[in-house]
Amino acid sequence: MEKIINCKVCNAEIAKSAKVCPSCGAKQKKPILKKWWFWLVVVIFIGILGSALSGPQTINNPQVPANKNTAASDKTTSVNKELSSEVTSSSKPAPVKDFEIVGDLTTQHDQFAFYISGTLKNNTKKLYSYAQITFNLYDSNGNQIGMALANVNNFEAGGTWKFKAMGMGGESNDVASYKFVDVDAF
Image (spheres, rainbow, N blue to C red):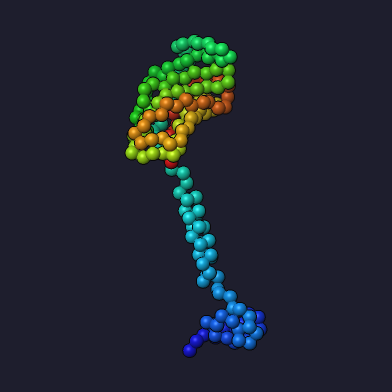
């Protein structure tokens, strides 16, 4: 025996499978769970929720000790831009699993910003559509006064990237040391 339901318009008893009420002619609507667009919304919502919970992929790198760069090694001047000092890092950061800083890091500053330059090698077999390297900046008392970062798009597998991280926050003359923080890539 077929299930009986009531018409939503005239309240007459009709078969559950009826598409139209025989009494009043009103079209019977499908339950929301049988509509295709409802399931599409559910799938999209689950996808958004899953990606939000997973967050951005972060490559964890070990902390490298802060480099104390208080003595200037070179002084240079150029037109409209006076570089007051260029300092070469005395120790290499330790190699990391997926990324490695190759060679020494150099620093310089002008009246506008503090810069950390170097080369980063991608030791993976993956092309990263975006990569960012971050350093913390400290004053002579050891207080964090800002950060320096550089980013690149399409960091090729096995490739190297010559970066120049620009320091933000604080005065460029106040930076006495810096510390490598992390490489984020996805």
